[in-house]
Length: 330
Ligand code: NAP
Ligand code: G4F
Image 1 (cartoon, rainbow, N blue to C red):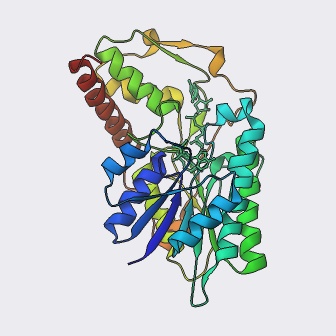
Image 2 (image 1 turned 30 degrees about the vertical axis):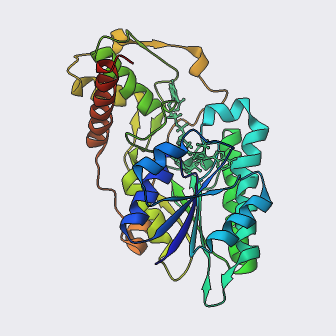
């Protein structure tokens, strides 16, 4: 039975990856931080086969202890402050966790190492935010980086740290440059889930409007369940490498609103959306669109869920959640 250690286990991707690896017969260990992390119960209910191990990406000795305890075949480093807007307000903490956290996690892998004939394989959750003010469209593995947020800057550090440990120490370390991926488990702070959840509440008469920032930014949005498969595929390759994972399609926030409100049975979203400058960013990433042809050729990976299917899945899930809450009087 293969053993995997996943950081960021309580996050959207950690939960999808735990399900995928468990279904593949892995024993999955999730790194959990804090004294009594409120999300621990929820993820254990969701996946009872999961085991939790204490640790924090700010604390190297806790990471070494976790790797020693688990003796993993594969480590997936998904833990981060992942909300770009928060990274502008807490830049130092973002550098500490999203940036230096990668160095600590891969250093723990280097120190513990695994056995000579079974060295630990490492996956780093890199991001399309690294492309920032994009130099070309679509963006591929060879597109230069120009990050536009403390989060993007920290991810560039983590990305090059992964590459450096691969070259310097021969670690089987791969980096997935993932474009935005969403789904019903997406945090409510991100724009897609904020829209589908607010829309469900509008439909049920619980809310009147949605306050949003820049509606003109365009993103390459895929489904998180498809994207965690690519993470696993990268670690099954003989040779570690970096891969862009994306759908190759881009849509603005306006287009997301068009599709979501149409699915919910409205002719127009304009009467329900108001602009709130609190959601504008000091520097914006205007357009992301990925070229995942390397992942298709080498990993055999392609996305399955379409943009419309994704929006529908998220809206229907939020409608069911909000209806259940309403019926329970919450
Ligand atoms: P997410 O839902 O925000 O989850 C972040 C996870 O990081 C949570 O489990 C959180 O744990 C954990 N974490 C935060 N600080 C930590 C610390 N000090 N020590 C250990 N763990 C810590 O993010 P996601 O959407 O699943 O994304 C997973 C990874 O992929 C992140 O690195 C993100 O930056 C990257 N990424 C995401 C996307 C995307 O579109 N989703 C695209 C490209 C890259 P708590 O619950 O305890 O806070
Ligand atoms: O949903 P977002 O917050 O995602 P963003 O900034 O693209 O970052 C996500 O994807 C990255 C991959 O490219 C990940 F690395 C990162 O961890 C995260 O998962 O914002 C998307 C767009 C932005 O242009 C933002 O300005 O939506 C715009 N937006 C407009 N109004 C808003 C809002 N974003 C949020 N969160 N909330 C708003 O009210």
